[in-house]
Length: 308
Length: 308
Image (cartoon, rainbow over all chains, first blue to last red; front, side):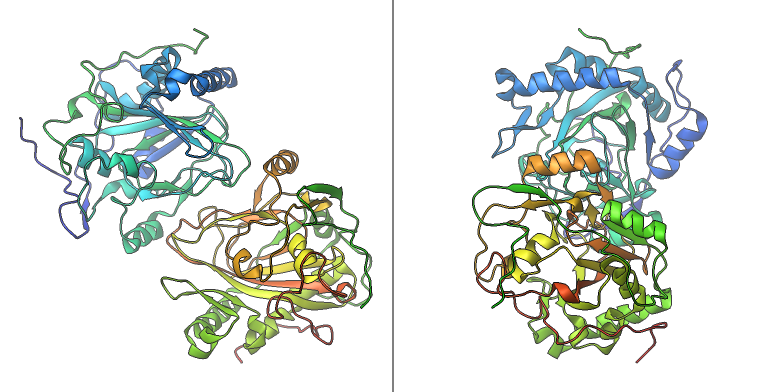
């Protein structure tokens, strides 16, 4: 097993350790031709803030197609029985559907869409693979809040991603508004790494995906970072795409609107940033449906989504 | 005991009853001279939406004065021991302070400030008295959400206010933003009365002020009303005042920001709208610190707040 230096120690002891980011945000010039790439100024904005909201990336017809596919999957008995499906305890509604590209040709196609992958290849200057994907449903009235955290902290500790070289591209399938539990971010927080106290218990993912406790920075740390960067909400109409740097601190309030909020989320890791050896702060990596290990980079696809 | 017709039946049986509002929102021309009144177009906006956000009503110096007074009260052992003070179970922080005008000359002065009372006298066309007052603290990170409800539904059922002739005027002591559990409202919802199922238990206020369950309209009702009116947030800088019609549906998400959110809230009822007899859907009225019964209307005060 290859030894890789732990550049971002976390969950090693009882204390919080704050260090500067040791990786670039924009990793250099991508070699490929990227027809759906972002203009220079938007990339600069992403590098500064650690996230970027781009409206009107997918059309309303394409959103309708994805919504219908999700309805179909959520009603499918075989899908509901899969480990990738998390049902609400009371209502039996599908709350999360992990790795939907595994059993939906449409979502496999969306995962490879150049409108998502081209901008992220610009940022990461490498081939990409899908590290993690999910449909996130935040139910009307009852969808609970999620505490502040950095995704990278978890992916480093529990999956073994060595460097900050991953970006989430996610699609709003319903409108995201201040009242329906939108993603909130601390702009600029991706430039700091907060190594957290504690130790990862085995199978931590079984509780952490419902409620994040480990990996939440200290109140004073969050206060200082929010004082500097403020708190921004990612709002937009269906079809909006958000690019979210892996280390940007984020969380969300509860959904108090009378409508479910649905987002479709793909995490892309640089091919050269695959986990090597065991995770940095857990005894074994999370299961593959949460932390994919494919044999080859993904092959981008072009053009509008169409009925299969 | 005088008999008053129940125009807004609620908590009478197991069903929800939806009726049109039977009262005006603007009750006519006030007779008094109201130097701090609102212009006509803002009153129309209030009549249409059921709420109105007015920035820069109190100066930053005045806000600082109120904040300091609140800090003083929250640290005062005698105040903390009063029934009007509700402490957080864990942190012992003062979460709510009811009727602060009773033991703070400054807050008594604020309650009578013409910048609050003149606009509400324009709306209610009557003398006013303070039905209810409180400082609302929504703690950083942990301040929980509050379900959709109409205040009038409670005040009618549990206090005995006969008509929709009361308005809340509240002051932002800290900034109210999408991330700190702001008030959210359904514009136009004040024109409908949702009579709710259920029966008021004795001493209901002891739980309802923490978590509203009774008096929450049905999900389908809320969905239909939000579809028509949308959901709006009341955001603003410290010193902003919000006028809130007694029947406008509202609620709030949790405070996920790293800062406490503090608002100072005064509910004014028309002098002619005092409770007569017993409440409409409870065996006895709430205690006086939640539902005041003064001997005379309040006497408005003019000019900037000053150190006592």
